Amino acid sequence: MTNSDDFRIEHDTMGEVRVPAQALYRAQTQRAVENFPISGKTLESSHIKALAQVKKAAAQANLALGVLDEERATAIVAAADQVATGQYDEHFPIDVFQTGSGTSSNMNTNEVLAELATRALEAKGSGTEVHPNDHVNASQSSNDVFPTSVHVAATGALIKDLVPALGTLASALEAKSAEFKDVVKSGRTHLMDATPVTLGQEFGGYAAQVRYGIERIEAALPRVAEVPLGGTAVGTGINTPDGFPQRVIEFLREDTGLPITEARNHFEAQANRDGLVEASAALRTIAISLIKIANDLRWMGSGPNTGLGEIAIPDLQPGSSIMPGKVNPVISEATIQVAAQVIGNDTAIAWAGTNGAFELNVGIPVMASNLLESIRLLSNTSTVMAEKMIDGIKANVERARFLAEASPSIVTPLNKLIGYENAAKIAKKAVAESLTVREATIALGFVERGEVTEEQLDALLDVSTMVGKH
Image 1 (cartoon, one colour):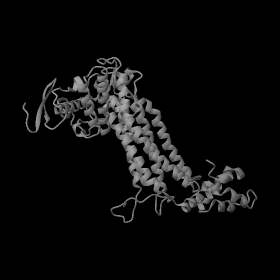
Image 2 (cartoon, rainbow, N blue to C red; image 1 turned 30 degrees about the horizontal axis):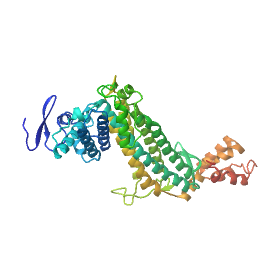
Image 3 (cartoon, rainbow, N blue to C red; image 1 turned 135 degrees about the vertical axis):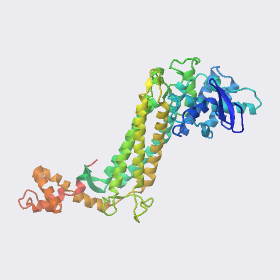
Image 4 (tube, rainbow, N blue to C red; image 1 turned 45 degrees about the horizontal axis):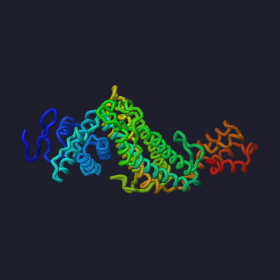
C-alpha cells in the first residue's frame, strides 16, 4: 500500500490499513468503520465527551503516579480537552453496533488523542510521539474505560439535563394546579362519568407524577455514578500502579463536577451494567407518566364542538392539509411518540443487560446509545411540554361545570339518605330520559314521599361540595 492525496497508510498488529488522509484516527478505527457498516448511527456527542474526560483523568493520574512523563501527559490532557468540546466529533465514525465491549470506540478515542497530542508536540518542535495504546491507554482497558464513559455521560445528562427539565415541567403543572383549584369538572373512571373533581386536583396529580419521576432518577443515581475505572481487563486492576483507581476517579470527579465514585466491587462493576438497566427503568416509568398526562390533556382539549372541551390547548400550527381551520394537540402527540421510543429503548437496554458472561457485559454500546437518547428525548420533551403546551392551557370553566353537573354519578351523595339501589334508579332514569339527577329524583317521588327534601337535594347535589379537601 502507498499514500495518496485521499488516503494515508496506517498499521496495527494485523497489518496495514488505508485511512482517509484528513482523519485524526488510525488503523483500528478504520477497521471498525469497515467491519460495522450497519446503522449509520454513531456515539452520542455527550458520550464522546465523556470518553475524552476519562482519558484526561487517566493521563493526570498516570503522570501523578509516574507512569507517564510530563510532556506526553500534558499533551494528552490538552487533546482531551479539545475533543470534549465536540469540535472533533466527526472523527468518531464507528457505528453503535460494534464490538460489545466498546473496544473499537475506546481505540478510536486513543487514536484521535494520540494524533492530536503528537501533532501538538511536533508544532512545538518536539520529536516525542504519543502512542494510542502505550500512552493514551496506559493503566486502562476498554473493559473499564468504555463502561465508565457511559456512566459518566449518563450521570451528567441525568443531573444537568433531565432533572432540571422535569423540574420545569412539574413547576408548570403546579402553577396550573393552583390556577385551576376552583374549576369543578366531571371525574372519569374507565372513561365513564364519575363524581366531580377540580381541574386543579388533576393537574396536581400530573405534577406529582413528574416529581416522583425525579425521585426515581435520584434514587438510581448512586449506582449510575459508580464506575469500574481502574479494574482494567477483568476487574483485577492488572497493569495499573498502586492507587490508580482512587487517583483517576478523583481527577475525573474534579473535571466533570459529577458525584462519580469508585465501584464498591470491581468484579460486579466490570461484569454487569445493572446500574444502567435501573436508570433506564426509571426513564421508562417517566415515559409512561408522560403518556398519561399527554393523553388526558388531549382528551380534555378535544373538540372544539364535539369533544369534551374542558380546556383549551394552545394552537401551534394548522392541523390538516384538507380541513380548513383544524388544529391538533401536536405536543401531546409528539410526547406519546417520544415515550414509545423510550419504552422501546428500555426493552433493548434490558435485553442487552442480560448479555454479561463471566467478567464482561458485551452489549454496552447499544445500552449507551439508547440510554443517552432516552435522556435527551425526555429532557427536550419535558421542556417543550411545559413551554409550548402547559403554560398556555386555559380552562373552559362553564363547560367543565356543565359536564360535572350532567354526570349521573353526582347522585352518589344520596346513597346515605335513600340507599345505593334507590340512587341507582335515579341515575338510570336521568340517563334514559335526559334528566338532571335532581329532576329524576323528584320524578321518582322521593321528595313527595318525604325521603329527601328539596333543601337536602340542593345541598347534596352541589358539585362544588363533592371535590373533597385534597
